[in-house]
Length: 259
Image (cartoon, rainbow, N blue to C red; front, side):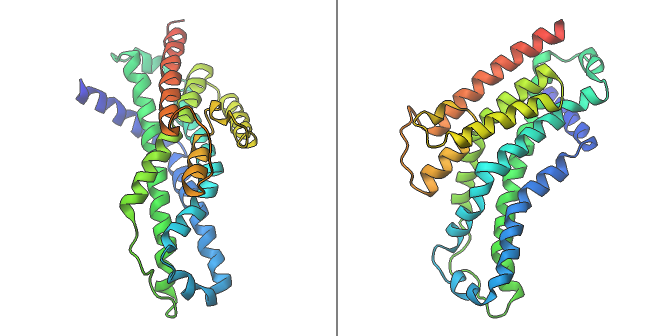
């Protein structure tokens, strides 16, 4: 059964090559580190001091994740989900997919798995881009020494996992909307409205009720030590939202597929 599911996931992954998801992942992952890297050419004289700071990697990490958590990652997820779910609609392939001897649950979870793999790749590539942003200036400029401390990969991977869980409600709800509505712009528009609402309500006491806000909440609580009163850990609430959205999405998918 696991092997069969893996083959379905692989099939969905191969379909992805006909979309722009690879460019979206690479572009989204490299955008912020590239801006930070280029901005350092404007103040090369200050780089030696910056690179000798004990908290160099932590500072670079916080700077990079600010825009990523609040803006780039949510938007990229919305686009990834829409692109993956639109593969069948664009090619009128849903009838062919449903004609295969695969349970609807397998089809539903396989596409969802591909979305999560792409999000995981995006976050992983972003971490690699942060590392490159940090090590390239010492390679290019003789006056700049390497950072005094090594890259804290283990700590950053733990934070990567936390952010992956934080954005899972966005994946779940966008996937529900895209699989139910089967249009490109409508789920994207709803997601954009929810994302803007989450940013505007960040100072609200009950901001945790907005499922698109957990990456921002986690970032502010951990990186900036901003106190927030939540009924549970952000990752726990985010995971609960994701399970609810996924279950509801599957129920709606089955209803429409049989209708």
